Image (cartoon, rainbow, N blue to C red; front, side, top):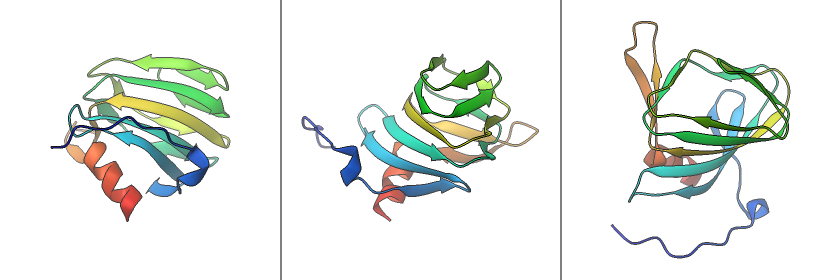
Length: 131
């Protein structure tokens, strides 16, 4: 595993990659050393993330738009922190939204019985952004 060098990135130079229906991302950083990853999410009106658990703490900043989830409504300019092991039943974007998001580990998506249906982590994001 290589040590990550110092990094300076211009977001306009990074292309968008699809994550789920209606949600694209720009990968700013993904660490094999720590599992941490940072993305800019572009969420179309009506898009959402289904039930999921954070296996690492997360932090976000709403650049524009609106996000609705268990904590309430996060409007443009809102910062939020999501602790380790928190479960979100549904995270919705009722209008066009851009969200700057860092997670310190994987996010696992769950069915109604809490079985893992998929895993979002640094390696998947790297794969999707290079594909």
